[in-house]
Image 1 (tube, helix red, strand yellow):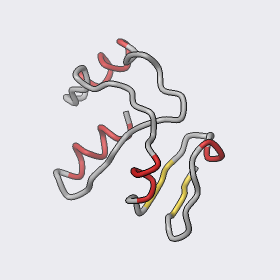
Image 2: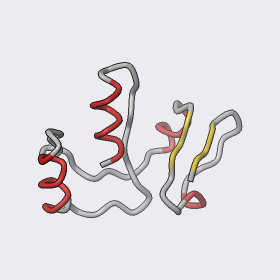
Image 3: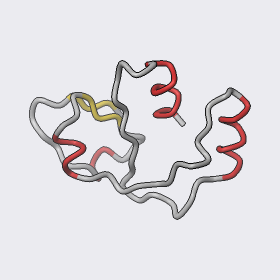
Length: 80
C-alpha cells in the first residue's frame, strides 16, 4: 500500500520497488478494494520476495518490523 501511494504521489519522480521477506501468495482483496477507494489500482500487482539486487541499488530501504530479515549494505539508509 505504501509503495503504491508513493508511486502515485511521486508522479514518476521516484522509483519505488516493493517486496517482502515472506510475501503472501496473493494480494488481500480488502487491501485492493481500499486502495481503489482512493483511486490507486493495485489489482494487477503481485507479492514478491525482496531480491538482494533491489537492496543494493536502493538509496533507502524501508522495512516493517523485519529489518533483520534483509541484507545490510553500507551506504544505504534503513528505516523501520
